[in-house]
Image (cartoon, rainbow, N blue to C red):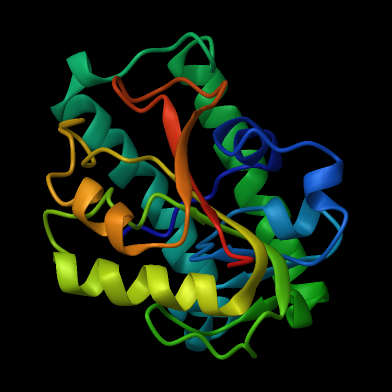
Length: 213
């Protein structure tokens, strides 16, 4: 898995976040090298890679940007540029996010907890909102239906209000995930909601789960 550095602006668009959504404690899982926690109050970032220490983490996030570019190059027709504008603008956003993340990881390590789905080191109902970007469903070609079932249950367990997951298509190809509807039938009430973020073709919706029930 790539340790990707996404910005808070990307998060706000991917998850259609309003100031009210961010008023309480928020979980970013699995956050990778994102600057969302660095830029946003009340955010706890969780990722298994934080266990490796600062120096190794810095090496990994700085090495990952070419890897994401390679996925785009291999599936060029599966991406659009209306949100970023052009590849150079995306590179600038990601590079800035990477450095903000590393600065915050060094100066505020309590914002970052080593942990992985489907077993998070968090108490039940400890956050208001849980966000999961580019892990569930995105990697469904590598993580099977049973893993997704356990991961979704864990996100609901730690969340008081809502779980939001984006995107809902397979990385690279943009193909739909064949077990998404089956898992939704087992979850608390959920909906597919359009978001303003545009990059991977077909990835225009997030899954919103009502964790209050």
